[in-house]
Image: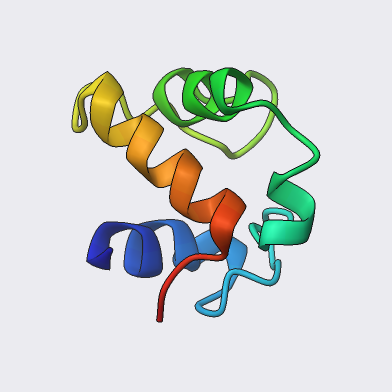
Length: 75
Protein backbone atom coordinates (compact mmCIF):
# COMPACT_ATOMS: atom_id res chain seq x y z
CA UNK A 1 0.00 0.00 0.00
CA UNK A 2 2.90 2.34 0.71
CA UNK A 3 4.27 1.86 -2.80
CA UNK A 4 0.99 3.00 -4.32
CA UNK A 5 0.45 5.89 -1.93
CA UNK A 6 3.99 7.25 -2.26
CA UNK A 7 5.27 6.21 -5.69
CA UNK A 8 1.98 6.45 -7.59
CA UNK A 9 0.88 9.37 -5.45
CA UNK A 10 3.91 11.35 -6.61
CA UNK A 11 2.24 11.85 -10.01
CA UNK A 12 -1.37 10.89 -9.32
CA UNK A 13 -1.68 12.91 -6.12
CA UNK A 14 -1.31 11.57 -2.58
CA UNK A 15 -5.07 11.06 -2.43
CA UNK A 16 -4.88 9.47 -5.92
CA UNK A 17 -7.36 12.02 -7.25
CA UNK A 18 -5.07 13.23 -10.04
CA UNK A 19 -2.11 15.48 -10.61
CA UNK A 20 0.46 15.11 -13.38
CA UNK A 21 -1.17 11.71 -13.94
CA UNK A 22 -4.91 11.16 -14.07
CA UNK A 23 -7.04 10.12 -11.11
CA UNK A 24 -6.75 6.58 -9.76
CA UNK A 25 -10.12 6.67 -8.02
CA UNK A 26 -12.40 3.62 -8.07
CA UNK A 27 -14.82 5.44 -10.34
CA UNK A 28 -12.13 5.97 -12.98
CA UNK A 29 -10.45 2.59 -12.52
CA UNK A 30 -13.67 0.57 -12.90
CA UNK A 31 -13.93 1.91 -16.46
CA UNK A 32 -10.87 -0.22 -17.33
CA UNK A 33 -10.41 -3.98 -17.28
CA UNK A 34 -8.14 -5.59 -14.71
CA UNK A 35 -5.96 -6.92 -17.53
CA UNK A 36 -5.53 -3.42 -18.96
CA UNK A 37 -4.66 -1.94 -15.56
CA UNK A 38 -2.17 -4.71 -14.85
CA UNK A 39 -0.51 -4.15 -18.23
CA UNK A 40 -0.26 -0.38 -17.64
CA UNK A 41 1.22 -0.92 -14.18
CA UNK A 42 3.80 -3.37 -15.50
CA UNK A 43 4.61 -1.86 -18.91
CA UNK A 44 3.77 1.81 -18.47
CA UNK A 45 2.24 4.03 -21.15
CA UNK A 46 4.63 5.00 -23.96
CA UNK A 47 4.65 8.70 -24.70
CA UNK A 48 3.52 9.60 -21.17
CA UNK A 49 5.17 9.98 -17.78
CA UNK A 50 3.75 6.57 -16.69
CA UNK A 51 6.71 4.22 -16.21
CA UNK A 52 6.58 0.45 -16.28
CA UNK A 53 6.99 -1.13 -12.87
CA UNK A 54 7.85 -4.66 -14.10
CA UNK A 55 11.45 -4.41 -12.82
CA UNK A 56 10.13 -3.79 -9.30
CA UNK A 57 6.87 -5.72 -8.88
CA UNK A 58 5.53 -9.09 -10.00
CA UNK A 59 2.44 -9.60 -12.17
CA UNK A 60 0.43 -10.87 -9.19
CA UNK A 61 1.31 -7.70 -7.27
CA UNK A 62 0.20 -5.57 -10.23
CA UNK A 63 -3.09 -7.48 -10.24
CA UNK A 64 -3.51 -6.85 -6.51
CA UNK A 65 -2.92 -3.12 -7.05
CA UNK A 66 -5.39 -3.02 -9.96
CA UNK A 67 -8.05 -4.80 -7.90
CA UNK A 68 -7.58 -2.43 -4.96
CA UNK A 69 -7.76 0.60 -7.26
CA UNK A 70 -11.06 -0.63 -8.68
CA UNK A 71 -12.43 -1.13 -5.15
CA UNK A 72 -11.19 2.22 -3.89
CA UNK A 73 -7.64 2.14 -2.61
CA UNK A 74 -7.46 1.84 1.20
CA UNK A 75 -6.15 4.76 3.24
